[in-house]
Amino acid sequence: MSHLFVRGVDALSVRLGHLAAWMLALACALSAGNALIRYTFNLGSNAWLEAQWYLFGAAVFLGAPALLKLNEHVRVDVIYGSRAPRTRAWIDLLGLLLVLLPVCLITGWLCVHMVHDSYVQQEVSPSAGGLLRWPIKAMIPMGFALLALQAVSEIIKRVGYLRGTYNMDTHYERPLQ
Image (cartoon, rainbow, N blue to C red; front, side, top):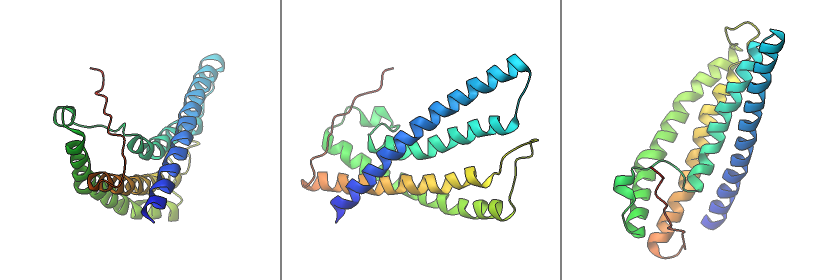
């Protein structure tokens, strides 16, 4: 059962990571198009500017689980980098259980009411021609829920590795300084 969960969550995170990459590319294209139109024709649209940051925000929330799955998330390298693979697995496990998972669950839960209120009120950006706000606000609890799912997958992997039932890639490459 747990291996199916891990494979399913990992596959979902990878797919969302690819979607996030495309969203970033689209945000860049939108930014370039906005600049070109603004400086060439002296035209602009707040909706297009807001769409850029909506895409960027969605890319961050959808891409974070993929970074966790790929083991590319931020760490305190002084503590982590020179440790043995088993020690790193314990550090990961404790960090996932005591920091990441609680933060994801608490933040996601606390944001649900904000999204609901924004949806009920059909909140719109105060900028002229601005977009509805609830879709981007909905990315917050959804993103944290997806990150929590990936955290559970990583917890299962670390526990399996520590028990000797899961062959985890323990290679760690220190970031370039």
